[in-house]
Image (cartoon, rainbow, N blue to C red; front, side, top):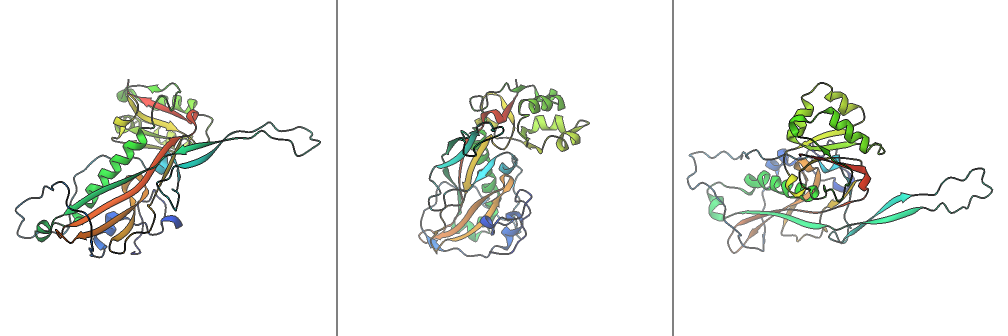
Length: 319
């Protein structure tokens, strides 16, 4: 793996668990070319222009799509089981302890601690694409569609996490206001609801964020009492009815996400990347089908989410 500075990993350098993570936006062009024979046939059809210009530039430009908040900004993330990444995880959640003893005569009093297990089922997500040999000879490369497929995977994963944003999971009275009327006062109401949590952040639809960020005092809101306010342009369709945001503490949502079991076949070329907006690690695999000489690729990650503390979040709704 190349030593390429990681500039998008949620504002942090790679951790020991993902030391090979790189900034794919810039590193992709430097990947060594190498495709190796293995399995699978072509699925679905690509739509490439039949006529190429006299000189085809090697770089590809991707159309703008939706943007999403980094999972690390509003969830607590755990690694999957190293030997069985698709196994359901159990996260220990401490919900209470006994009262302190005054003027004790013994130091072996049972404190009455209560620790529950939060089950987090995980799913393997695989974003796949290909280039036929004919298209390859016309100048199309796997890398041309890398960013587009990465963004599609972004969208799918963001929607999966947004499915946790429901009134059943967070029963506190929601902040119900139209985006054109949303302001710092509404953010203050949300703060009151989750005041017990020491760390507070918000993920809100871009329409709401625009009204908030373009008002006097927004800088103060992001510095005093809020650890971050993050816009997200889509992904709300899978959330609860009319939900367009959530204000939460770190105990509200738990995620288990990471790589698959690292026992990949030697004839598949593989790299590890930080995935776009979401700031999680995924595997990028490339190979060639010997029967059709088509070039195959996939982005793979395991991801699962669950709600731990239902009192640590409050929803924002568009009435």
